[in-house]
Length: 124
Length: 148
Image (cartoon, rainbow over all chains, first blue to last red; front, side, top):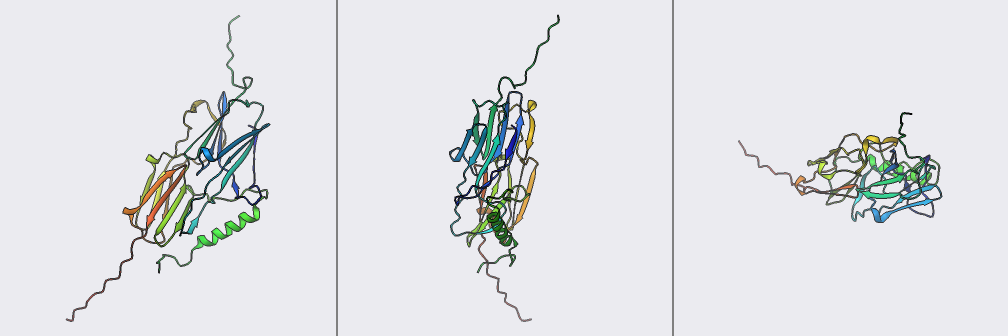
C-alpha cells in the first residue's frame, strides 16, 4: 500500500461522501484494511479495482425521522468513499472483502515475491 | 407546550455552521469535517413524543456495550476489540491507524425527562439507535392550606 488519497464528495448534486477512518495492517502474506463504515451493509458497498487504484464506496440510507427535529448532530449522515493506490507488492487476485457491524475488512494477499520468506540455512 | 431545559440550543447553531461549511468545502481539497472528536459521535432528534439518539459504533459486541438511561441523561460505555476476527494478531503491524480503540464512556444530558422503563435500543450495521419516550408532564399539586 503506497498511499491513500482524499476523495472529496463528487458532484452532480449527490450527497457528500465522507472519508472513513481506516486501519492498515501489514502481515507476512497479506495486507489487511479495516474501515469504519457505520450504517453500511454488504448490499450498499462497492469496491472496485482499476489498474492499481482501489476504491471503496459505501452508501448509507439516512434514517427517516418523521415528525422529529434534529436536536444535536455531531456527525453528518452520508456516503463513505476512500481510494488507495496499491503497490506492486499486492497481488491483484484473491482480494477478499467482508463486512460486519459496519466494519469492512479487506484482505489483500501479497505477491509470492513480496511475501516474507524464511530462508533455511544448511551447514556446508 | 414542551418544556425544555435550555431555551437556546447551541447545537442548532453549530449544526447550521457545519452544514454551511460542508457546502462551502464540497469539492474542495480539504476533507469535510463530519464528526466531533468525541467517541462515539451521537445525533439526537426530538419530537413531542420523545427523543431518538443514534450513535456510530462500528464493530462493537453489543452484549458488551453498557447503556444506561436515567430520566434526564443517557450514558454509553464500552470498548471494542482491536483485532479483526480471524486475523493473526501477533504477526501483524500497523501501517496506518485511525480507528478508535480506547475504552469510551459518554454521558449526554437530555433536554427533557424521559421514562427509563420505556426505552428501546437497537444495534444494527454499526449504528446504535435509542428510542426514548418523554415523561408525561404532571400537573403541579394544588395544596389546601388549613387555617390554624
